[in-house]
Length: 301
Image 1 (cartoon, rainbow, N blue to C red):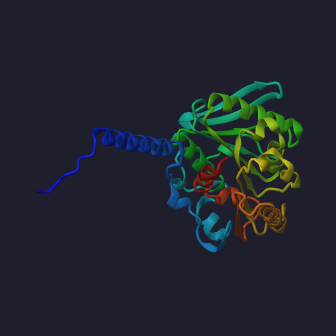
Image 2 (image 1 turned 30 degrees about the vertical axis):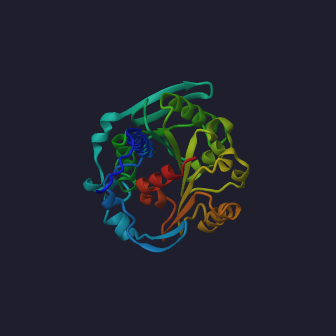
Image 3 (image 1 turned 45 degrees about the vertical axis):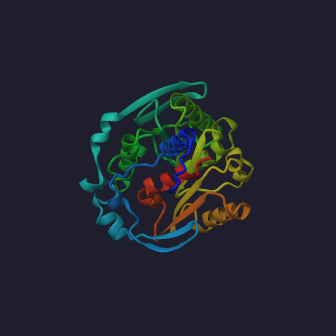
């Protein structure tokens, strides 16, 4: 006669409890790992990758294709399929009063309870309106607005007094205000052209660097002081987008700075995208917001 061995009831109870706890744990991890949902990915995908080695990528860029064939009016109005202006329903022009001064800014999406916050800091001669213009730069600002609104996030495009300590204090105050309203949000700062000076100053500020989870330098400059900053010590991810024919900030110098970051730490979360034949404004037009931010979300400290 065959003898069957029956496990005690307690074994099944403990096994069930273990499996349940494991499921809950992985569900929580998945829920906390925000990944931005798609918005017109096919239209905004990089046209072609010429080469890619580790964290360094060279993207094919052609003015006739990426401006003239993409815009209804070159450099002024993107074709309709690149834009969805319905996002203006959640766009507000606001004024924040702080000890650093009054900060005019445009907010798109959730001004509290956001899961992700992205700021765009304009370059010299720009204003808060540049970062929310739906039709310039091939509709790429419209895309980041829709990505934030569609993913429970917040997009901010502020004015500031200058590219020095006063401007940095104002942006730090703006970040602090919205960080308190959205305490669980990951915060990323994108800096176009001279706005990069503020990116590096924020990285060095104790009150701001602890809140920032990623920096995006778009056709911008470099700053060796980053290596002694709190943001570098936190391993805040950094993305560089640069045109190979940028007449303002030479690509060779930005590439050298990028490589110096990896020389300090081979595993530092930094990426460089070189837009071959692109000029100063090319990274603002061509950078893949979703791909870059999803990478930063996966590497955020």
